[in-house]
Length: 339
Image (cartoon, rainbow, N blue to C red; front, side, top):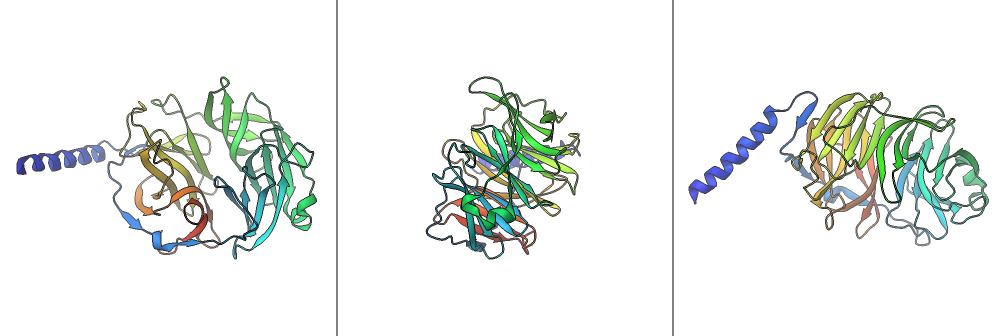
């Protein structure tokens, strides 16, 4: 038995050394990510008012001093606005429906910091509507949005980082049949509704399913794969900086039936990505946050101990705001001393 135990330890050690030795500047193999910090006690509940009912798959966005929650499951108003500092409820808008001022099928909410506007995708009407935040707060129930852009079914933006009307970065959806589609990061000109897919494609991935985050300040974006233990970092022109392979990397075969990455967000000079690593049918929701530097080097794991549905970074307060599948829905995690 002692010999068997010795060989198991030896093989594990050799595997780790092999992963480290074959890493390069552009191909990083991380066989172990074992710097784990339990932060469950630091996750603080955000109470919401009893009459503001928000569905479990709600998405979180930040615009200046506002926290915006998009709830596509709501039968009534689908956008809820809070003060991001105190979490005080302010207003709700965007009724569900077919009317001219209503949203049929809520998609992504784009953030325009300069103009203090949000851009709301309606995948039912195939339009993107513009909401002026000051006007919304003055008359939330009867606000009438304007049309920002028209979408089409050939190619359309999913989530995106708005930078200007002529240059944004989006996850581009290209339907290939009734039930299949291609998934790419692309530059997007909203005025012309034209797309320029980024050039880098991982050679081993055939069916790409990703989330992405971008930092214009750092000049990089990241693709996080849900079906493969892979994270790809590129510059803003789509040139590869590095591929980061986790312990469940399967050479792109898809044979490892696990759900890997959820979402990613840049927190200053750090990259935080939610991570599941469990069976894709039973352990789908991430419960951990992996912390990397901008070169893709693993730093630590923050163990939330709760299922993370959505996360965003509040840079003014240096904290993460999360939608959880837990006994309480919304929470925040102060990052002081953790990053």
